[in-house]
Length: 189
Image (spheres, helix red, strand yellow):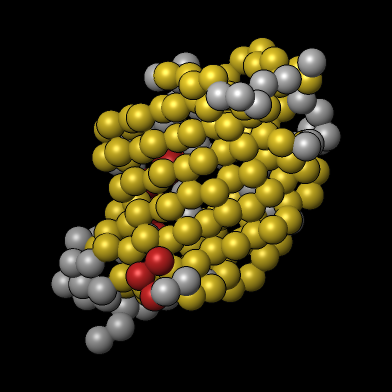
């Protein structure tokens, strides 16, 4: 028997989520390049209950006068060989469908690109608090050209790798409840 579909935000209004739906991990790569901020990642959910969950979730974009339009949006269900799961889009984000068997797991690949109008990029993390539980594990990677002088990053990286033409910043978190968004401020040399 299929569970009901509820419209709600990916990170907001947790009392609307089926009690058994858990957002437990994300593995994301960020890239700042040529005036754009690219986000590409895998989002992991599980169903701790004995009934299938079918639900629409909202994936928000940061809105600020410092950020331009979002394009190149792609969302796929990794368990169903790259099935497109976007239901509708707005300038604030998009709705996508989560379909997880009883006691199953779901992996969803989501990516987008946002125009940067000033020297600041942001990824929304704070709304994770609305789920009520921390990520079990999270891994983040930021790739920048070497000519980008980082002024500040909201989370101190665990390590940094210097490559020929770029730098790669790494974060690995366990039992992670974000207390701020992921924000990078920079100056181009």
